Length: 474
Image 1: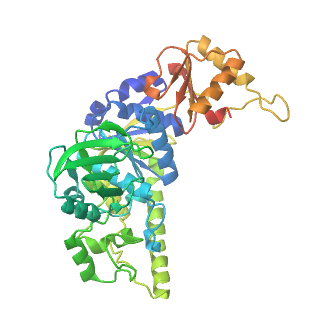
Image 2: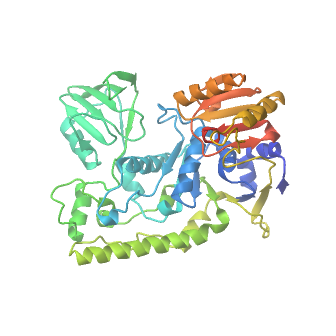
Image 3: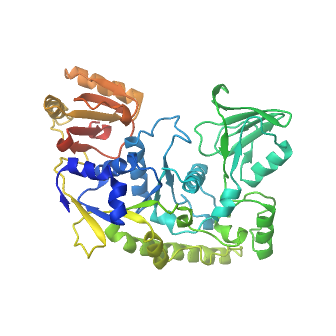
């Protein structure tokens, strides 16, 4: 099915679930980068079930996450659960097989994604092949570790402290970072995943009296909460039975003198659980998978599996030379046959770069060859040898507005918005409005400035939309 009109494409994606009810798979070719991410965001906007975007690598995962949070208006500083929909499940930024643990923000993102997958709803999880090929903690173990705290609930504070320790939270004198907690008398400060600010729980004896979020810099309350969802801050849950199982298997690092937690503990995950799960085990049955670079995904997955196996072998040899224990890694990496089987269980949309032949009735083929003027960077004419001129861009913007189009310039900060506004005013071009997120941009023609970050620019005359990222100007 060839579509060369973008408006017809939008008609299709508004009813994507109906299309997918007739065909399990849709293949789309001819779009990439920011334009593809813009179209994906339209697919996801009205979807009421879980969607998982699988990217070929971590770099693309980051750009897709950036664009989806922008086009779904989730780049607000205070957005949090349950309003937030878009999450990222990244690979570790450093291999735990080197005896080092990942950054706390990476841990937070992974555990948030596991919770949202387990909860169903309409969440969007963006991940990469690198993250997908490793097994993770069992779903039932994770769900057993989730708590809901509400006002008027009664809790034993000593038991609560022990539970926070078990879930991987770090005791501190003052809560500033995610994963911190401080219990002073009858006040618990904690900064769990899912929330944009830390939370203060005040007790009257053992009864929760109030739950409020607060600003960690001035300690002032920001808002009251009816409840909080408390999820683990570690993929190793330090229950007594898990610790006993790990000790029985032996070979734990000699540096482990107390629990919970030690550097590189994520590499020892096989020791703490009877069996591990995969990310697919967390997917609800009606999940939609969106595959990017679909025609090359198997080839890339095989290369990543081989690379991961090679790295583990190298780290094991290094540990042997240092006469140090190394974790049991048997079965921790998935094979291609399993990946292929699991992906095949779900409805999916594949984005590919080049046209392909339709094979039987397997796929609904959607070819998108859109007229656009996309550049990685706008080519500006030189005003002199030392200075770039914005005059060609300004002239083009005037033409687009006169023709009835929306022109949106995306700026990463308030200072950049003010700087950009002054530039346009100096050229005699009026900025019609300034908005804090994409969803607030009016549909009427005009020039708008929008706070946010995107991976590139969009030039779509078919729907009278021209979006310019600040890197195309500065």
